Image (cartoon, rainbow, N blue to C red; front, side):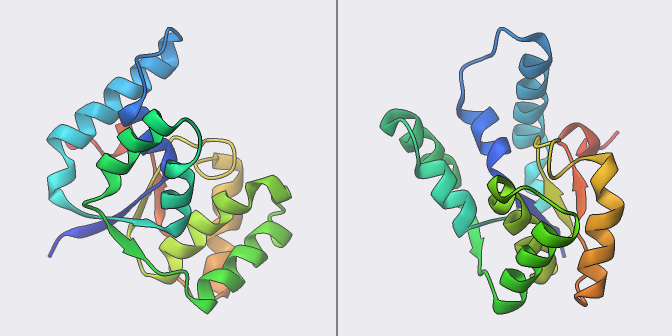
Length: 157
């Protein structure tokens, strides 16, 4: 059985955007493409209504490119437990209200028992200063937290 991966919106954005002139962003885009083309088939990939909503927002041409990428991915439900966990993450970490979608990504992955959460969002998700607290709050809600990582961290040797 394949391990499960929740693919957060930043991954889809890096897959569909033009190469950046910023060296770090360009490197992260390249790593994302490498993971997507060489490693993703080893995993069962999931998204949620939050990813879908974020991907379909903005420029219609870019939104269509993102829609094509996500159309084959299975979508997870935002269960009542996930909604409650989202609120706890916002209140107890605490996260700013503008990070509600970030908290929802974590909560939906945790409530659905997803093993990994793949993201480039290092502000409110893959942030070493927050991970311990995220894990604590998820476990207090009787959910095993996902392993939060970037594509670079999921590259197998």
